[in-house]
Length: 133
Image (tube, rainbow, N blue to C red; front, side):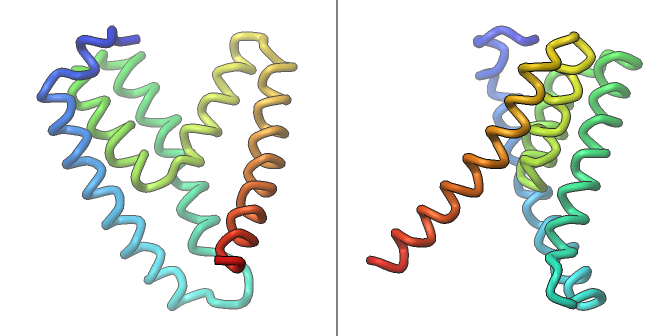
């Protein structure tokens, strides 16, 4: 893992910004396209984007870190920037798998369950609050 000083390197920041812009645009365009093809009450666009993001983060992290030891600038731009803007579900899924690989089964289970449950609760609270305002 990179040190704090390396994270705030100007090249990392620029890489994250560019990757984030491209990831957000990709999410939007792909979401519009998916919605135009499958709009049957199920949020296919979000589901497909989250699942492909999870796949890409797993694939790219292994490729860039374990196989080819790619520069942190590229890893930040792709992982944090592009995939971070594309979906945060990919990071969530990747972290659970890493915990499982490390043998932290109870932590992985708690993290998955608590994240989904607390996320749903906070969405409901946010929706309720917005309706009161």
